[in-house]
Length: 595
Image (cartoon, rainbow, N blue to C red):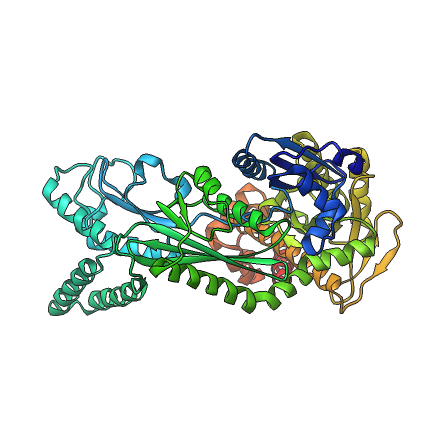
């Protein structure tokens, strides 16, 4: 089918989409010549990540465009839309924090993410700050030194900040515009690179508080002064035009690209970003895609310096900024320095990257061989309850051997008793009925933290939903040390032993530990919210009147548990007191055992 389809592909630019056997898009690419590019996947020699990609391709589609730029834009839009498993470039990235100053309607300073900023407010935007903590600390310090507006909304009365002289009372008081202007000039001057403004103000405040014997406040400000000196000790570069620019270079080796980005703001190197990614396609295409996706989440500077291997004209048109290559001078030195950093980063991290791959996607591949199937997504479930109370279940998700925390889910269970079978059945029915309803991604494999009871429950759910032939189910069977030492095959009900020294064993152990941790954390959260009243409801002989009296006298489960039978008998009969003490003892022991 693919070979026949390849014959019809034209020698034109466009974007192509690779699909797996379920029709899911697993990779999106672009090409100047679609026929040559697509043919290279199936007729040429492929290795590494590309080999794994090709092994999963069951079909492909393509869209012809009138230019390479159009194919590039289409590729990026399709990656954002479908988030294909092999387009991993920015899946886990967030935008960098910036410091934003606004004077309309009142002067404020806060830490923001670039995606939160409207274009009309992007003028006084400073960053990016690779260290979010540093950005927050600088903002907190400036807010402490200058009486900016700090509260939200528009209160009808002045707030605490006004009374401690950290706000001018903008909401209520008439403010001198000259005072605001001077304050604004100081703040913007500092954020534009004039460190002396804040440092001299800090020094004068330290001296004032020292003279007034406020040594604790002086010490706090001295700590802030030392911190600011460290943060602002940037590498100054001799680029006298002070244009905001980024410098991008890269190093390719052993199937990986190391991409280094220098952020130059107001003549200073304020930070850098390094990403090491496996090559799925032509590495130049991967770098161009990385750049486009990166700047969809971060501020685009006036100028970006990079190598002429990349299609600079296409990138300039795509991002509507200036991409240039340089061959001499200080800019070339910085471009070379970015290359050196990219090379060092890959060389220093190559072994660690390979070990991580072995532990994640490598272990996932071993599991595929063990079960004789293709596995991309794994859903794993665990249940937790306390004497039938606070019953919950948790689901964690692994994709290609890596946790996908945005897909984790928590479930409160309606089952009122310690019943793993019906708990598992209820939770998995809710999970996969909704997935079918909303057409969301289904797993290739479900792992139950348990044995035959849990497996039967899940299999019954899948049969009811018509999914029994689409999703494999296995139980993670524990040994006497509560560690997974074999898998229970949900189809044959045979056990599959796991080599304790294998990557699969450690992979399954990580999944088991993670789903148990996630579920127990949720269980503890609900349990902590559970009132003493709900506990007393479980004791026969304690009605609403006695419950109120017990709560009034003891106030907490702990104090009730510490009380003697005689003390409890002041409110309730002896037999009820004995039952309550036994229940509270078991309740407390269960909590201790779960920690």
